[in-house]
Image 1 (tube, rainbow, N blue to C red):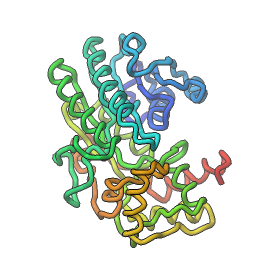
Image 2 (cartoon, rainbow, N blue to C red):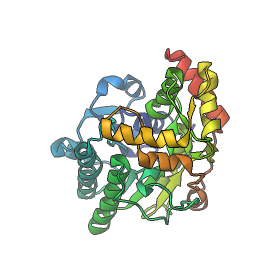
Image 3 (cartoon, rainbow, N blue to C red):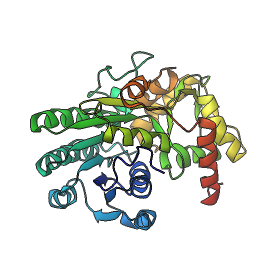
Image 4 (cartoon, rainbow, N blue to C red):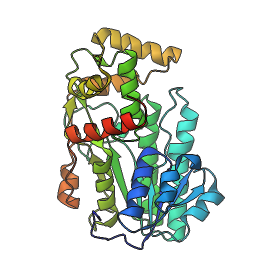
Length: 333
């Protein structure tokens, strides 16, 4: 069933990073529900059997391989640039910059050369850096100087994309998701469940700071709207479900795993984050991520609601129920 009234039916649409979590679900829905003619790029096509079943044409293409990406972008009406360096916990700033900045610049240039009618760039709320205000809307400046390699390169990549798009006359839309969870989500579903199962500390201090989850299909709904709305080009949009405190968020995974989410004092968390950065302990925790963690901030979707008509359809309870079903089906529970 089409979410956007078949507005993309028959349109040629490219999804970079289609073998990943967000890109995979987006490509799947574009092909099976929206009737688009979908091409997906990625480096690990063996992970995308479900996309082949959906009728998605898959191309092995690295963002830095200009010839391969030129082939992928050719004759496309719309491009969703989802592929990104998400962090392998090694703090490889060079790889982060190559993918999130240089790779993004390549996609923007090639899309403009190919005459693409709209490019939707997936950025992140991390591009803002640790919140300086409790209400972070899209007018809040990005932070290209933050320590966190992911957030820093997302900010720089987005800023460069805007500059190039303006220079080349390419209609660009930016989406800034929060913590995308749900079936197939490695970081915010499988990863968090494993942390709870292993007894790794996940509640720092009293856990009253906010998590910023968004269920995968809520995000894809928003992305589809940005591809067709006349109000979207030139704009950036936050996409987060209503904020929830970390205690509540981790309680879902605690109930699934049958063990409590482990807590440590905030001072111990600060020491752990510093040690993780210095000693490369492999934990998904840095000092800046901890600053995100402890604040009761929000990233409102008011702009998306007003300009796009966006409204999240899946509640946190329902989203976690779907995540749990998938986790059980795939042997994680």
